[in-house]
Image 1 (cartoon, rainbow, N blue to C red):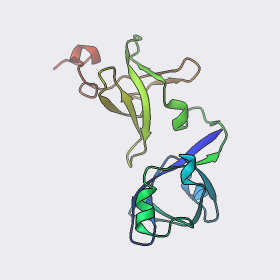
Image 2: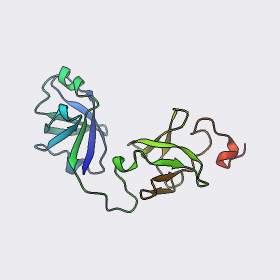
Image 3: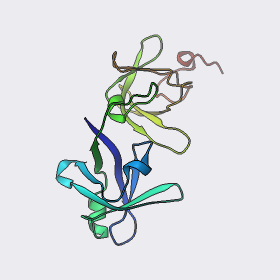
Image 4: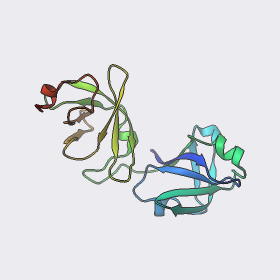
Length: 176
C-alpha cells in the first residue's frame, strides 16, 4: 500500500530547497538523504532526497532532481509516497485511511465526509466537507472525535458549537 510521507510546500531560497507538510509521525526515519520517493502525481517523480533539515519547527528538504527555485515552485503540492504497512497502533491512522469516511454525530446524523488531516503544532485537524460544500476543521482529539470505525467507514464527532456551518447550539448540546 502507498503511504504519503509529506506534501511539498513553498520554495525556500534559490537552489531548489522546499518546505514540506509532514504526513508522518516519524520524519527523522522517513526523510533520510538517499531515500527515493515515488510521487503523486507519478509524473513528478521519482525524487531522490539529498538533504533534510528543520528550522523553527518546519522541515526543509532538497532533491537531486530539483535544482532551482522555478522547479521547486513547480513541485508545490506534489505528495511524496512510499510503500508502507497498515498502522498497528490502536488510535493511529494514516491520512488515506481517514479520507472518504462519513462523519457523523453520536446519534447518527451525518455532518459530512473526511477530506484531509492537517498536522498542526498543537494537534491534528480533521478536515470535513459538509453537505453544503463548506469545510470544517475539527481538532483531532478524543473529546471532539471520540470514535473512528474504519470497518463501518465512519468517524463520530462531538465538536463544540461554531465549528460546523449551519448548526444550532441545541445540536451540540450547548446552551448560551
